[in-house]
Image (cartoon, rainbow, N blue to C red; front, side, top):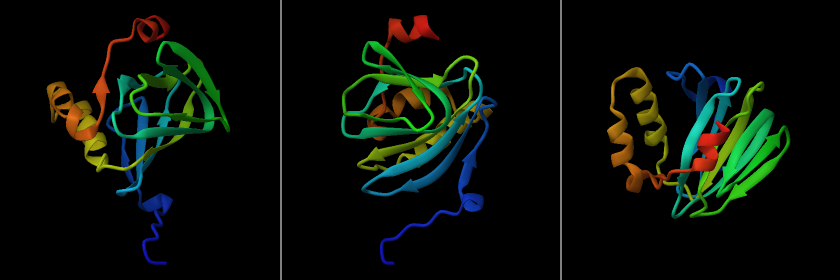
Length: 153
């Protein structure tokens, strides 16, 4: 069982400062980072961004997730699986009229839990949005503008 990771649901760290979402931190290893996020009806997850090194995997556990893929909008439903490769701009949020429960996995991992904790601190007023912008290289989370996403949301 060497190098095995088991995270019990009741022991996982939950970030819930955002009233519209809960992020459950699952694994933050060299090979992968994983979290489970639940988004309430129509709430936004992440704004348009891309990663230079990581692929991001989405598996919809329940509900409906709207995803921006470059300039296209895609709707994912329970059981759908999506892999977004590096450098592809993307964004996501629960579709209006639906909640979404999603498993996210990044590969390779890179200490991304501190990014989620920073987002939580911003929601609590304990950190500024500028700290998120300043951390783009550190967490490989590069924000972009998307008129398509703005129009859809």
